[in-house]
Image 1 (cartoon, rainbow, N blue to C red):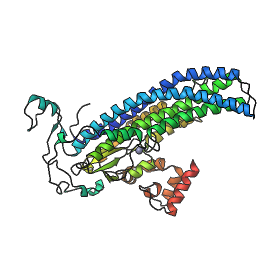
Image 2: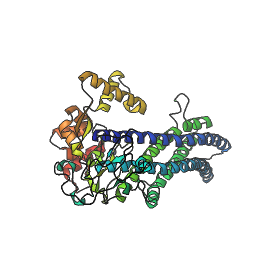
Image 3: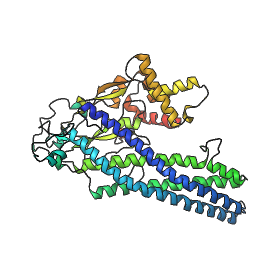
Image 4: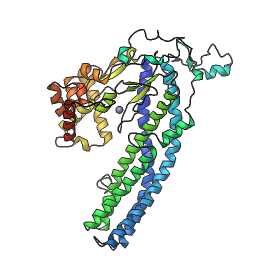
Length: 460
Ligand SMILES: [Zn+2]
């Protein structure tokens, strides 16, 4: 990874790092799926032989017992596979935490005013070659990197000038900032940290239990409706014609991938958050960075550019599957309003969907594979640039929140795409951005907001 030379480079690296984390989460998902694929063969073989032996009598105690025995056996086979995959990912998780802390440390130092320099740079304090080697990444380009004043935390837009006047205490030496988090924090993250709504163990138990349950329900239904053994196993396994995507096991694999992505992102973000907390003497707060495009959900938009003191309770990404948000450190010398960030000029996912539906009338966008949807998405970006002759993403102020993006950058079509047709109607009738998002922390609700939320729940 090239070292960032400027604030813009740094922004790009933050985005790249997030994209790489998504890829890692996908790789984790593949690992678990591979482990399950091995177990699937055993599951199916066992299931066939158990169904062969079955003398099932519907609605009798004996029949219920037989079904329970099948469920138990399936559970044993599946849990063994899950446990094997979990052990492997636990090792990867500690490697990931170590890596994320190092990354967070780089970002924190950069946000404290230190700049990466390419190649070797001897610092004034180190004279031996070994020391120079160790210190190659940092020089104090700004002699002003100081212990910040914790009382100065506020929203990025309001901090436009005089940003470094309020602190001139001790100089911060990069080597004093540790490159690891405490063992207690590492343990907490893999044991008790809540990622979305479950702990690490909760995710595994929940996913494995639901997996067994779905298989058992398919078997149960098959027996009750008098399917043949082959029909039952085909429902579980999926059919060759349907590329095995039509079976219960395929649904389970999709869930597994979702779990792996979520815990990967959760572990990474929790590790960074722990690092910021353990260095709260120099990292005075954290700031929620979302993405300025149509794929950012309303929940994440409501957290956009929010700041919390480091030790104040705050949400940690991911807040939903595929959440692209990240917490950045806040220091008085890093004023994001001075920098720039990209903002999408159109809702390319919505554009892609329209292009697809125009080309294939009657076909459903939702039923496309994720990779196909992505292909259409990139095509939409390309088409936009060809059509307009301009870039698909414009650079806006680094401190821009999603609300400002909505109000000042988005086109009317983008607003419509982002809000959806029903909410857009209300927006046209006078409701504002804030009426459509759930603020953090949840305050008392107004009737207007209740109405907007009710509408949303009816859509689902
Ligand atoms: Zn998000």
